[in-house]
Length: 148
Length: 419
Image (cartoon, rainbow over all chains, first blue to last red; front, top):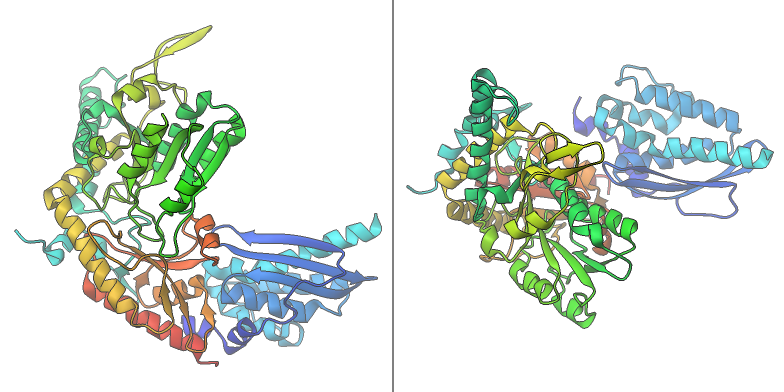
């Protein structure tokens, strides 16, 4: 597998134009996640409306893989129920840990399937998961805040 | 004999490696240097024939191991220009040496005292001082830099940075990011004028420059073995003998004591006072051989090669549209070390993140480092989060720089294709 194939057009497009980027109000929870070894950082907010993800907004710095993955994630989870969004998180994480051997489902993961190539580069898997992990964390906190 | 890089490369087996279809261009020597066969052989020979613990084992092997360990210390002391071998304390690495300095020098600090560092330091020369200040209530202050990546001495003077409250000044000799060579003697004179102790992080300087610690103006100098063709797991702290004698221990344990009673202990003289537990013995043997290897090449020639290869790299890299070098691009005798950090953007101005650059270069056989290079505050000061760094050493060839520049152009154009 070549690096050229890993950096698919979809990834570069999202890197050039990050969807839902920027911090917005209101928000139920806000988290900061970092990859200390490479310095990728994301500050991410989640706003829930009932059990639906009403908004995900973020400010992030890092490589094209982490930035594009966060952008794709925000496209996928906004407007979905928290349960569905977390199921997508599971599915994406499973794909990233598959060493590229899983056949990803385009119907559910949409642009997210572009990251299957990254799964073959173990050093970069954590880049692709940064935004997703931040979302999972923030969504859990937003839920907890609502319930308390 | 003239300096023959091809001949020198034959001493380093790893440099023959290929990465996929490409020859390896190892441009990450500021991270860790490669090792010549003589260093590898010396460590194997030690384990095969002379291995025993030092100082406490009274048999033949113990005596051989102790002698080999101390011979390593003598070679290193001679290499860095120390007046006496017992001024060299072996540590795990430069980070441990700086932690030792911070602990032992800092024991008497109190609120109102000041410690001065610089914004261009490696985290190893920041965090130990932050921890010290948190423990003691002392204040941490730092030198800013100018736009061309040099210490802003004028601003420091205007701020009265080094003053009567200053107790410790700790400055990197050569920046691991910018390659800047800092005016150690000048800053040491300022520190001494107010009665402060001058600590120098020599991790990037000792491998590249002719080092005479005794004449440097510094009181303590930290360095590491693995960046100077020696093994990992060993570094050192050189200190003026009279200062080391006054300093309290850092780590407690075996071999650093004089008499241990349950009610209290007294401590060995330096350097043993600072070497608790079984030290890195085979590593000291390897480092001694590494020091001899460098001395035989001649550090003046090593430094001249570093300047020449850095000048070539600066010239060819700066011809690339979209590449911007951090810090000074001037290579004088004291101008710059052999680390070049840079940013890269596509022709339409898209910043290509250093990790993406690194991945692409790696796929074309070029090993560089991408990230903040353990100098996050410096990157923040420069208004960026990360950079890519190519760093050179005594075995670096112009054709490896060419391979780098070609791979950078390819990377830039790949990321520019979607534009």
